[in-house]
Every structure is written in C-alpha cells, then in structure tokens.
View 1 (tube, rainbow, N blue to C red):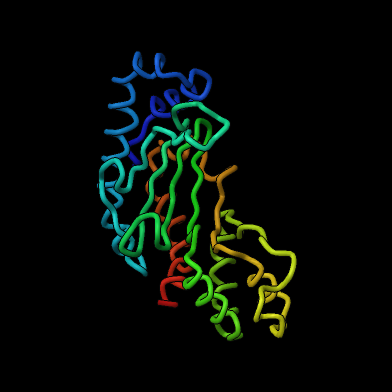
View 2: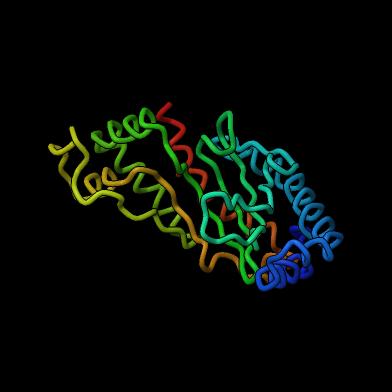
Length: 227
C-alpha cells in the first residue's frame, strides 16, 4: 500500500532547502498546501489505525501542531535564521502531550525518510525513575532487547551525555547498565539513511512504515512501563 506521498513532496523539500526565504515560500504556497500539508494529513489519517494498534497505543492528530509539526522554525535563539524547516516532521505519541511523552517520529528529508523513537527533554523526576529502573538487571536486559529491535531497522541509541556515573549511582556495575545511566534522554533513531524516497513513495511504502513502527514500539513501551 502506498503512503500517499509523491515525488512532488520531496521536490518541494529539495528546492526549499536551497531557497529558504519567505519570498520563495510565498511563491510556492500552493505546493506547500498540497504536497506538504494535505499529503501529510492524508498519511496521518491512513496510519492512525496502525499507530493505535501498537503496544503501547500511539496517538495521532491529523493537523499542524498535532501529529504534523510546523514548517516554521523558531529562530529567536538560533544563529541560523532560515525561516523554514526543509523537512516534514510527524510525531505519534503515547502520553498526554506529543512533546512530553515517549513518541515515534517520522521525518521526510529532501533525499530520504528518517525515523526514531523515545523521549527527549525528560523531567528530572522521569530521568530518576529511568535510572532507578536500570538498577534491575531484568530491566536493563529488556531495554537492551528493545534497542536491538530498533537496530533491526538501522536505529542507534543516542550517545552518552555524561563522562562519569550520575550522583547516587556510582555503585552500579555492568557495562550495559553503566553506559545507559550516563544518558539524560533515551532515544533511538535513524535520521541519516532510513527509507529511500523511492521505497517510501512506492506501492509498498506503508509496509515499510509498519515494519519500522513495530520495531520501535518496544522501546517506547519500556519507557511507558516505568510510569
């Protein structure tokens, strides 16, 4: 089954990447409406049953600032003042808020489709809960198994944030547990290769998305089961 996206979406992203100005965007607003917004809304509606059927259930909302992130960049604190994201970012989440719970991300770049899962920006309380869980060897084994499943579709765990063990966890042993404890967030992702454009827009594109989603869901389940 096709994802409903076409080459025109990726052509738009490719051209936006080298013409990232308000003037160019306004001239190409009709292309944005059709091949960025409408195509994404159609895709989100199509994958909704699939996402809701995952364990855990992943929520969808087929609108901008729902499952579809805005194309406009927040440039207030960035040296890069380009006004638009030259990618199409969709998110499917497990909790009450798309930005504050474990989620599955699918990101269309000009030349490929990236994806990932997990939770950035953990609260101190959630991070402590994760770290305490990693004192349990069975929890470490389960998380490592979920990481390996994500690896089946080319995803890698985010890099360690700390050089030393966090305070209060110096007594933990085991190479895997010690490495996991040096992270401030838990994310697996494949943003550099992912799914090729031809495969994504081809007749089996939705099957590719389903495979990725099923391989990433266990990672989010581990995070959700901590609550």
